[in-house]
Length: 190
Image 1 (cartoon, rainbow, N blue to C red):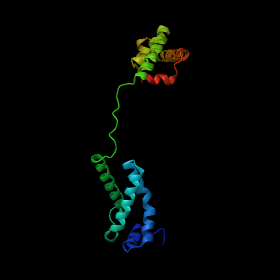
Image 2: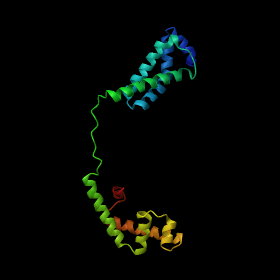
Image 3: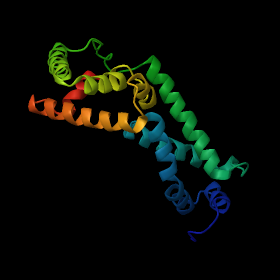
Image 4: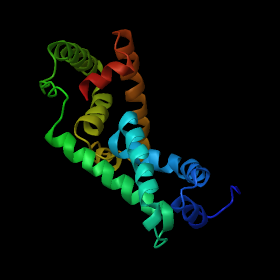
């Protein structure tokens, strides 16, 4: 049997019960059907079942099958999609899984403590900065001013402000580092 035979030729042979033609179709199209099912169901075992069922239906429908539209790949996608949707509907009604554990949306106490400690170190370090450095950090990071607006508030030109902000970040960074606050610790504040 030629591996380059068209899907229509192979289906005509499958309609007559040709197992070799059926095997060629399965080998040609099972990867796409499985991938689609896997993406829809997020369960490889169910995806395998859907792929198997899709090709079982192909075998059963072969005598009546007519090439139309997107041909065999489109027909297989439609069957696969419908089988997946059926499974998803059943999952919603008859889920055998345990109900999901309710997660407390509150921030855990240990994280609150760590967050408070980091905030205290940052506040102490900010207080230790010079007035201009502190103003540059506060206007930019706490108040969310764009550099141009912060420069205007400090009555500076933009280049001078950006230089000031750079020095302020370096100074604050070295102060935080001396206090044992690593860059990853700042993620606690997010």
